[in-house]
Length: 173
Image (tube, rainbow, N blue to C red; front, side, top):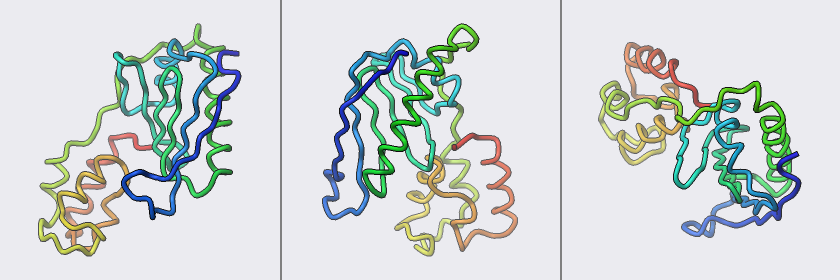
């Protein structure tokens, strides 16, 4: 077993103290840096950084960043959800470490959709029907996996189909 324990810290986002969501930071008792490329391979991280080492991915509808001595989970409903995700991730980390001889480590992030390709298919009216101030802000959320073609009410049926086909080649979760 590589990761045995951690100290959990629950915080409200600094930029929006009024926000209802919470963030969780787990300060790890062990350095897990060696498992990160294996975890990236198993969980399909969308961003992998070698120096300093970290892997980011989406799971359980949350953005999760794993560093050698810390795990960060965003936008939690409550502390219980944070506990559940941290325990799941602890199991994934330890499983990847135990099976590392069978896993080909990955030092690359998954390919991401291109902002301009998405923006090209959007109506560019900045209508705000999607809840965002501009089509560009909406497109950034699509790139990050937070929104999809179905979230744009103003997109034409043809471009919705094209956008869905384009996004289908990327892994968001």
